[in-house]
Each structure stands twice: as structure tokens, then as C-alpha cells.
Length: 435
Ligand SMILES: *Cc1c(COP(=O)(O)O)cnc(C)c1O
Image (cartoon, rainbow, N blue to C red; front, top):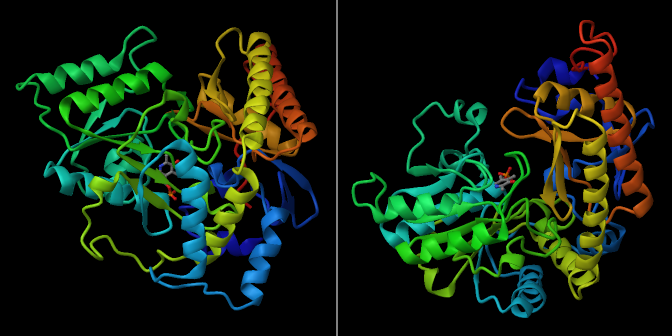
């Protein structure tokens, strides 16, 4: 369609990788306007854990609209909001012994991160926040300062400050525990890193290249935070809502973050919704201090509640995610042992997995080849060198196999082409067309 070239800004990104016009979607499938079917292994970058247009919540949403339920209500008390809070408390927080206050922020992840960082700074009276290499927390200025990616940072136009960057788990090699460095600089009054307000961290770095923090590292990080009086903020926007197998990605580590951010799949139906959870004693906001017009997306409250009711009332869904995760990791282990000349490695936890192809060029060829075979899949990481498998968690076993099969054959073809005819790259189209 010409209109996209005519008037849609150059800022487009995902649209460039998948140059089709999409008009229908269901579960793990999408269709373009010519009727071609695709398997969706991108899933709104982790926003569609429960699939597209999940039939279990669709009628609930339609009924709510038909009955003239409140759609927009600023932050006023509505029945939909109350019911969401009740369900979230009864089925998510209480069974996990989690005692948190819930703040409704603007509906984007980045706004929840802004609120979390602001709160930590105001409570502690400190300015700096410890953030990690390859972290991604959003692109509004405060969150962007916490984000590592230079492509995003360079667009800021002003200096990004108020953070100290620390090496994430594994950044300096497998055998170096980077929390020891954090502990050391926080203990040294001349390290130049004095009394930060908080640490903000992802348990698995999604945009940063599916870098997984070990359970021990997360526990050590919490201990270091406690020792030095730093608040621990877990950004669970992409890793949460079941992606790693549990509702919260940090459950396995048994840690208790002071502040938690959630968004992406929280709304259940792909509807915008974000939250900050904070320990009760940290709820030191004054009325309206962190504001926003769209803090009351009631349609999202309805589907978020339905998602929790349907998937998180017992352990079945969680067990199923873990089972599928084991299947994916076995398949990926097998794939990297066959292709990539021993250079490729697998990464991930639960259904948050990827293949490190070392080269961004190779990874792009693989995802482009996969798209030709009907699979929507993206890359992430500093050099876009990690092929990221992020399918809806509700995917059928058949389609999960089908998707991984496509990844495998795309990799096989790319690797064979690379070794056979290194001098002439005629096998693949060069750049994806923008039309
Ligand atoms: C996507 C993401 C964000 C930002 O969310 P937006 O809705 O894009 O603003 C923040 N943190 C993490 C970990 C994310 O994956």
C-alpha cells in the first residue's frame, strides 16, 4: 500500500521487517490482506502471551462494550477497575504471599518505569539509579537513561543522566559475579558511586538479546541492595505475565522486589495497560503526583481480569508453559549443535528463548528467510544478532513444532549458503523492501 510510503514517518521499525499489510489474527496466527497465513513468533514483542483475539475473553469484552460499560474514566473508581484489583489481589498477589500496593500509570511500559524511578528517587532523596549493560526500559527520557542501546539513546537530544551503569550477569564472562563489583563500589566512599536510590533490572533482558540472569545472581543482587539500602526494582514488563513460566519472572529466585513494573501482556488482549507495584511502606505518593490521562483503560481491566481468571486460577497454565519451554530449549540445543559451525548458542528461560547467531547479518538473513516461509520472528541484542522466539504462550503443540521447524530450516539454508558460496550472496534478496 502506497500510503505508508507517502505519509508514515521513517520511524517505522517492525513494519520494515514484515512488509505486508496485515488485517486478521487469531491465537498464534496472522493473515495479510492477500490471505497469506503467518505464524506469529513475535507476539507484539511479548504483548500477546495469550494470543491474538483470545476467544476466552472476546465475548466478555464485547458484552462490556454492548452494555455501555465505562471505557475511559481517568483514575476514577469503576466496577471494572475494582474487579480487576480484586482478582489481581486474590489470584496473583495473595497466593504468592505478596503484599503490594498497586499504582495505575499511563498505559505504556515506559510510563510505569518513569513512575517507579521517580518514586525510588523521592523516597530515598537520592538521584542516581543503578542500571545494567544491555538493559531496556523504554524510550521516554527517564527510562531511556536506564536503557543501554545506543541507537535509542542517541535520539534523546539531551544528556541522559541520573544513572550508574553496571555490568549485567555474564557481561564479564561466566565466572565473574558482577554483583561483587557492585558491592565493592558501593562499599568504597571514593568509588565515585555513592548511595544510589535503587537498582532497576530485568531478570531476562528481552530487547538486550535474551540475556538470562542466573537465579543466584538475582539473589546476590537482592542481598547487595539490602546491604547498601538500595531499593530493588524489577522491570517485569516483558519477562512477566508468564513468559518465563511463572506469573512473575523472579518467583524462582524467591526474591522480594521493593518495586515491580508490569505492562505488555498484562492487559490480556493486547490492550494498553501498565502497573507499578510497591511495598506498602513505599507508597509515599501524594495525590496526583504522577498523573496521566489514560490511567483508566477500563477495556484492558476487563480483559486483564479475564486473563487472570482463565489462566492463573491454578498451576495448569504455568506447567504447560514450562513444558513447552523445555521442548523449545531441547530443539534449539539440537539446532545449534548442527548449524553455525559451533558458534551459535542458545539463550533463555521458559518460553523466552533465542539463538545467538553472533552476527547480526546472519541473524537478519535467518529471520528474513523464515518470513518467506510464513514465520514472523525478530532479532534482538546489541547487534541484532539474537533470533528471538517469542510466540504466544497458548500456542498449540503442532504450531509450536511447525514454527521451530521453520526456524530450523531457515537456519540450515542460511548456514549452507554461507559456507557454499561465500563470495556471491545471490541466494537471498538483499534488503527487505519497504513496500
Ligand atoms: C517493552 C519494554 C518496556 C517499554 O514498554 P513500552 O510500552 O514500549 O513503553 C520497558 N521495559 C521492558 C523490559 C520492556 O520489554
